[in-house]
Image (cartoon, rainbow, N blue to C red; front, top):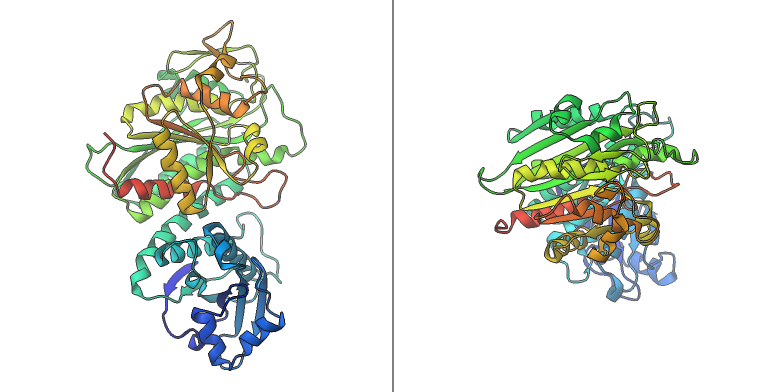
Length: 496
């Protein structure tokens, strides 16, 4: 979807749909007031009569309002002004986008950023509205033909703002591009989106940007590096694993990079510890961490942020073949630490541990892994927030702040040493599961053993990257959090 600026009088703007907001029990403001004047008070009369509902999230679509050039006016209820915080603003924009996606309009003129929102400035409101509308405009079409009566998504939106907001739209374009990439990868079926497919996608990035390079490791190269944990997960599949390394250079070569590591299990049967058949098709989303770090990488490259970034994807397919690894196996990771496998369905931490060890060669300013790691995270936080774990509270707060800024929120869970005892093994340095109690946290504890002496954080996005037993598909999260984090880091001095 294309973004543009147009500060013509809203009542005179020729558009398929003009989108305005109204607060409850509050005089009309901005474009809503101008439109009310243009139609001789008809808009206010509709509000006063209750024909336009001003409660938060309510919508009213008007047609052919006298004195207004727009063919339709979508009025978004914003509720009480003192409760209209950034989350409510983002929700209103998303609802507007979803409604327009499924209607006959092909373009729209947006005035929602005129609504005062919890202290956020116009730049943020324009950017966030554009991102939210673009995300809501998404339709999956890669393997599904449109029906004859389906409406096409919006082709373009304009904002009632002057050229000073162009930077906000540019930032929104990059973030929206990252979200789209993540969602498309997440939604693709596993017979298409294999580890090799993710590697090809990374090659496309490198071909598209002059300051991006890529390196792909296959089984033989990983075996030379002694990545036995990652290789064990993929050894039961005909689709061989890949370690994908994308490098973006936006600063001097001596500037330490941020390193993002993504879990890319393109399909997870659970291996020998086979999952139940019900809802197993959703395990194509188990590469949501990889999809999100690739999306954030593309957003960074599109925005040409002044930062160095390395993105590492540990891609494999977990299958129950005769060659598959077993419960009871002891694996020697790239770090030299040994792991007793109690459950082959706890495979994400095994591919990540070798990827984390490999990533340390880049001398990261920050090392952040992102993974749909545990069902326990969904039990804890539902689908509303990603879990963040780190021994570095300052890094955790940077990610939390980025999530708040992008309305892609996280919540910090403890990573206390006392939880490490649940990983004790009789036959190895550790076991790969810590039992039912605090399952998300013990998974984070496991990964922490492979990020010693690093400024490291773990993001469990099992609940945020898609909704279990839902037909919504991939959300693209936490691309917003990661991209906002990179934007924030690009504005700061590098970490020593």
